[in-house]
Image 1 (cartoon, rainbow, N blue to C red):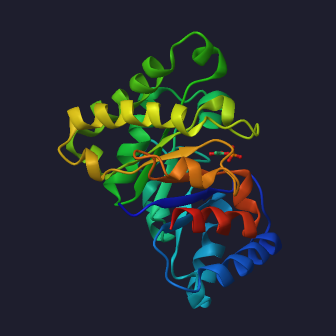
Image 2 (image 1 turned 45 degrees about the horizontal axis):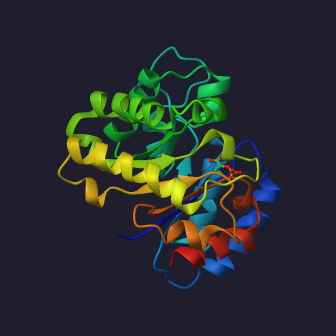
Image 3 (image 1 turned 45 degrees about the vertical axis):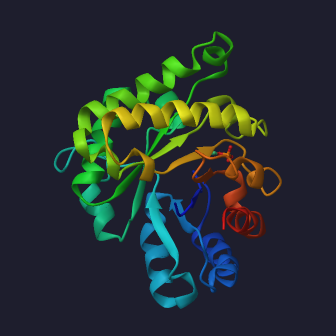
Length: 251
Ligand code: PEP
C-alpha cells in the first residue's frame, strides 16, 4: 500500500513562516514520489496553503489537511469549522481525536466518532487518532483503550470505516522525544488491524499510521513494520529537511 506521511503543524506558523516552510518543501516535492504526503495546518492558514498550491506546481503532490472538524454540519456553533468549509478549501484530510483535543477540549470517543462522520460525509478522509496515556500503558490497558476508541468510530460509521486513516499515537510519545519501539508500535497496529478486519472486508487496504516523536532517525525502522503504513509527524514537520527525510524513508 502507498504510505502516507502527514505533518501536523499544531498551533504553529504565520503567513511568512508557512510560505518559507512550503517553499523549502516544494524543492523536495517537485519529483514524483512513492508516498502520499500531506500537511495538516491551522484553520486560518488553509486558504493560504490552498493558494500556494495553486501558484507553485511543485506543491501539486502535497495534500491539504485540517487539524480538526466540527461534529455538526452547520448552524449556531460559534468558533467551529464545518466539513463543508474544509471541503471548500480543498482539504483532503482532517485529523480527528488528536490526544491534545481529547485532553484539553474534553473530546469523548463519541464526539470523535461524530467528527469522523462529518468529514466522511464531505469526502474528507478523517485521520482518526487513538492512543493510550502513560498511566494507561503502565496499568496494562493499552489494548483496551485503543480498541475502545476505535470501536466508537466503527460503531458510528458502519461500512464507511474503510474510508478512514487510523493513526496510533501513544500519548506518552507525542512531543516527548520518546518513541514506541518499532515492535511495540507494530504490536498495537496489529491489534487495530484485526479489529478493523472484523468490521470491514477492506481492512487490509486501510492505512494505519504511527505518530509520536517520529523523526528522520527512527522513521525507517518504524515504517518497515508490516502494519505501519505511514506517519503522523508533529515537531519534525516544522523543519523541511526533517520532514523530507521522513518522506524519503517511506518511499
Ligand atoms: C502529533 O502531534 O501528532 C505528533 C505525533 O507529534 P510529535 O511528532 O511532535 O510527537
